[in-house]
Amino acid sequence: MATLTTPQPPTTSPRDDAILLHKAFKGFGCDTPAVINLLAHRDSTQRALIAREYKAMYSEDLSKRLSSELSGNTKKALLLWLPDPATRDATIVRQSLAASDLRAATEVICSRTPSQIALFKQAYHTLFRTQLERDIGLYTSGDLGNLLGAFVTARRHEGFEFDMLAAENDAKTLFRAGEKRLGTDEAKFVEIFAGRSRAHLNAVSAAYQNMYGNTLRKAVKKETSGNFEHGLKTILECADHPGRYFARILHKAMKGMGTDDGTLLRVVVTRAEIDLVYVKMEYQNKYGKSLSEAVKSETSGNFRAFLLALIGH
Image (cartoon, rainbow, N blue to C red; front, side):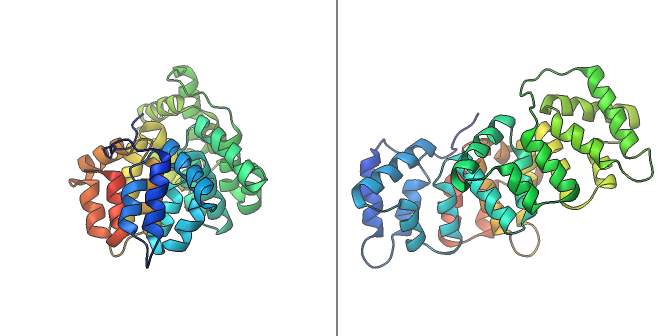
């Protein structure tokens, strides 16, 4: 998997980094560019060690100090960047569920692999003293609640193997549950989309198009709506190519009047240590301009500087 796309600076110790951050915080106003330049070029393990050293040396949480020194989108971005990916995902999902931002919660849950979900479920329980499944039940309902609940509990294979006959049977089941009938059997869509591996779902998608001359994505769009549709499409597209999916989400966040800063920062930060290099390639291929060019034209100030530091060139 690709890691940070930004070049790594000369090796410094976590203690040295903690001292540099403390210097940036001292005096009148915060040296925000210095904070960004340091933290944006440290990976998850390094950031955890810096936070530990900072607490030991200055008897305060680095996250609390960042919160008091920064503001606006820059504050949100750095606070989201500081923790490890599992803790970050757990925090995003909890905040999104509590704020009824079900689209963001759905995107994060449905785009993650089984191993990523297992890690962030553990982090969720540690942080919030409750089970992710319980909160999904509290904050969501209907088809979306059923999909998210099933997706975080199902045991899915992560390998590339699949059974073509089983995939064809699932394609037939989905056709009968959707396009062939009046109304939609949403439970069948939940069962197959939440319970099958990415490799298997790709085979189902290919079989569906081969048998019925229509893409499974178009069938989902025709037969479902709202956040349930968004969840199904997220699962389907991430099974095929997560980089392409997130390139599309980023483009949607930046096109037209105004920019969806929340989506922009969430996607860049959460993919930076996973597959941002592929997201960038897909963005360039599909939209004819680099992701960094798009972000540069749609953002400003320290927020722009931080995002560009993660994205690289």
